Length: 370
Image (cartoon, helix red, strand yellow):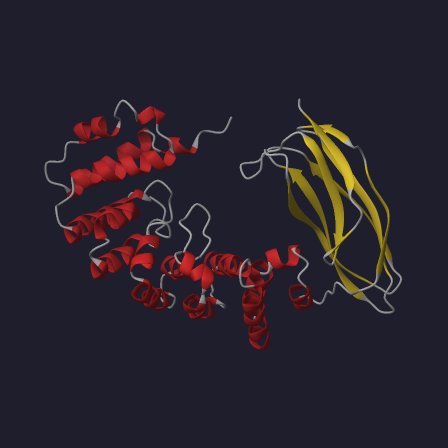
C-alpha cells in the first residue's frame, strides 16, 4: 500500500528542517520544537492539519514582526536549498501559510514575501485571500510577475488567480469577470516553460466553464501567431469545451459536429461487472463525407453517484483523419476501478461512443457490489 501523503513529515524532514532552524535562530532547541510539533494529536492529524500545526509552531519561534518573520523564512529557504531541497516541494507549503496568517494587513511586505517564497514552494493557495481583499493591487502585481525571470514566479502569476483552482478557495469575482486575468495569460501564452504553460491552459479551461465564448475568442485571436507552445496551451485549455462537443472548439482543430459519418457494430464485451473488472468497447466508424475529414473519437460513461443520480465522464480514444468512405474499427478497454478522483457505486452505468461531439445510442453495464 502506498504511504500516506501526510507521512512526508518523517524523521528525514525533521532532521532537515531543525538543522536549518539551528543555523538561523539563536538558541534554537530542536528537541523542544519537535516535542511541541509532535503533540499527542499529531498521529491523528491529516496532511492539511499537520501543515497548519507546523505553521503555528514555527511562528512561535520566529520574531514578532511580519517583516522579521519573513526575513528568517528567506534565510531558511537559502539554507534548505543548499541542503538539496527541491523547489516547488510540498512539505514546506506552510511557509506560504505564514504569509496569509500574519501578512494580510501588510500588503507591500506580503508581496515581497510571496515573490521569495513562491520560488521555493507553492503559494497559489495562500495568495487567494489577498486577491479577495486587495483585488486591484494584487492583479496588477500578478501582471508584473507574469514577466518575471523565474518560471516559478511566472507560473504563480497564472496559478494564483485561477478562478476554480482545485482545493483552493473559489475566486468568485474572477469567475464572474476574468478580464483582469486575461493580460496575464496573454503574457504567458508562449512561455518557454511547460510548467508555466500547463498553468495557463488550466486557467483558460477554468474560465471556459463559465465563459466559453470569451475563451474561444482568445484562442481565435491567438491563431495568427500561434507557435507550437501556444498550440499546446490551446489544445489543453479547450479540453472541457471539446469534451462538451462545443462546435467552436471543434472547429479550432479542423473537426466539425456536422461531418457525416456512420457508426456501426457498436457493442460491449460484457454488461455485468464488479469493481476491478474491465470491459472492451467495439465499434466501426465510416467517413460518409465526399472528402477527407477529421474525427475526434471519444466514449462517455454515465457513472452512478452515491445519491443514485448519474454524472457523465468523457474519455478520449483518438483523433483520426479518414479519407472519403474510409472505415476504421476500434477496440478500447475500460477498467472499473476506484481512483483518488472517482469512487464507483453499484448500479446501472450507461456508455456511449462520442464522434465529434455526437453521442451514439447508450449501452448499459450493471456494476455489482463485490
